[in-house]
Image (cartoon, rainbow, N blue to C red; front, side, top):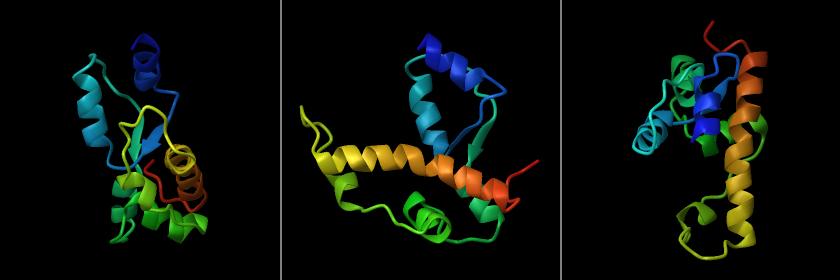
Length: 111
């Protein structure tokens, strides 16, 4: 928790993702922190006039690929995750960074 708290509270480190309020709420159940420099890309997309603002749709519109839904709804409680689950998890972590950079190029991010 100390390392994660330091990252979440670091004002020089951008933390970008989608639908972050629930994730932050769940983390607060484990440890206390004051997040800083959080960018919810779904909120940014809505402010830009987009209606479909989930990761799958934004990746399709801005990155040229859509994340598959199948692994998202699979059994994540398994002792050993499948290759598809690992690929989905890696893409789910990587895509928001790429979206953030693309939104930055398009001057969509708040100042």
